[in-house]
Length: 142
Image 1: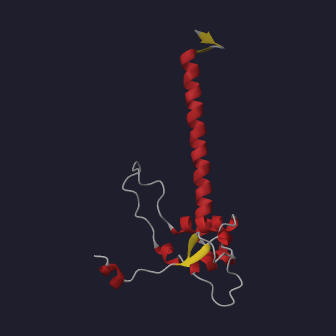
Image 2: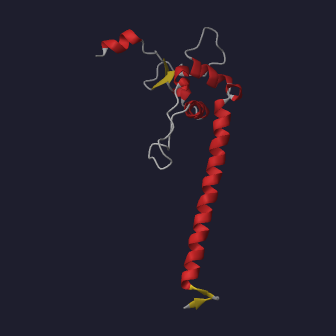
Image 3: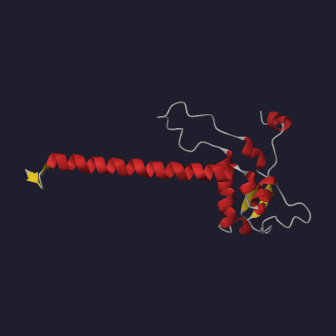
């Protein structure tokens, strides 16, 4: 059976090819957007002052750049997560590994906190300072 000079099989193949090309283009756009975000969130000089202060820790006396927050809130948000910015996941073992999707990297943490600030959620939370685990405390857990 022919339709406009193409057989049904040819038409189906053309549709399949068009969908595959659209998918590749979407993946390329996503990769470009991720690269731009990675660059933005990897450069501390690009971060707003409130974001830098939130990542560094609880406000120092007179720290006017520190984001507004609600100490009476029952919702806590860790602040001073700067040590987490030192963590980066190991590369995925293979390109087909199911563990390669959301690798931990500093820019992801920065992007999350930036979004929390932008959406006003930090202002509704009680900020809880991070306490780094020390070797003696870790050993007590065994």
